Image 1 (tube, rainbow, N blue to C red):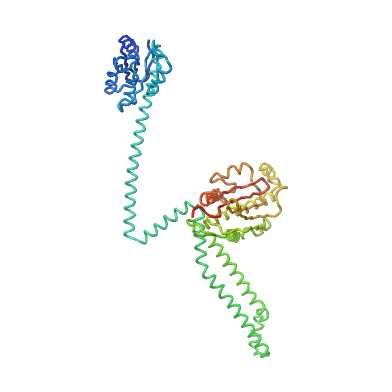
Image 2: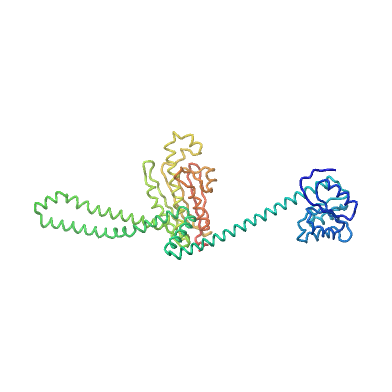
Length: 479
């Protein structure tokens, strides 16, 4: 009887019955497998250690040590423990089969044999055996490749360290500059776009802070000196009402009455503008604080107000829309332990998004006739859009959970369910190319959840606006 066999292998048959050995050997030789035989358990163990067969057909009932004992010893031997063992026996009790399988056998065939079944089982386990060998070989190769790579990486790291050390020894200034650059790169990865923006704002604010304070301080003196000169001139007019002709001509030429009235106004206007500039510088410096590695108690209202001051130019009315109104509903909130710079970035992202949503609602209303099919498809009803842009900021403390709650709500275009489900995807944005990166909300979530151990979620419906809610612990666990 011939069954085509694709797998090559060595089969060890162990049986104390010469007839069984002869019949099985003849049947299996026709398959092309190499056949080895043993007549007892000790011989089977010796053959297995020497020849390392691919499969062992092991009789259970044998003189000396039986098949169960031989199987147990083979499985305890590191040289033979991986060889598949198929028991051959006339025993058909379930307990005997369970015993053989529990000792490590892979299969169990009973006498008298059905040769097609025997050949099919051997072929199946031989395929498994060969695949296991291949997998083991591949794993060993992979481990070797990993080890080789680790060696190369270790050498590369060592060379890099040596190079850095040489550079540091030759030029300490260059080494310091390199260190600063590396720190900036790490900061850029951690804080995304905030780092570069924060450094730029902080640098500009620092450079112009002293000149502005100088101008602001001198303007009060300039105002006083101006008034003194005006008072002195008016005294001259009172006691010397008839000046020389040349002086009269100059008075008429410069329109002294207008100058007396306008010059104090100019000084006052300059003072107000410089004062406003000083406030803006303070807000910029407060917003761009880089103390994102140490928590400290801060007034979150001050952070929100500084952010609003920076965004003031976007809140003003323009040719496309009316002024966006800010409604502050601040509660009594004690100082909150947090990372000031990153938290200000969250306020900036959420308030900027609110302004964008309101501006988009004005665009939709203005282009309602031309874009009606698109608007209808988005689920936004024109009747639900507000005529005036409005952002409401609420703060309060949940005493029971010891968290501060910050809500930022707008009456803009709102979001569909599909958009809300995709907001957690990095790089996802509904804004036109060049206006959004899709990182703002992702960064905000990371700052609130990972850095502060808080939560950030939203409620939004198309045409009904969006409300973001932030909760952060009053006392940081990261201090």
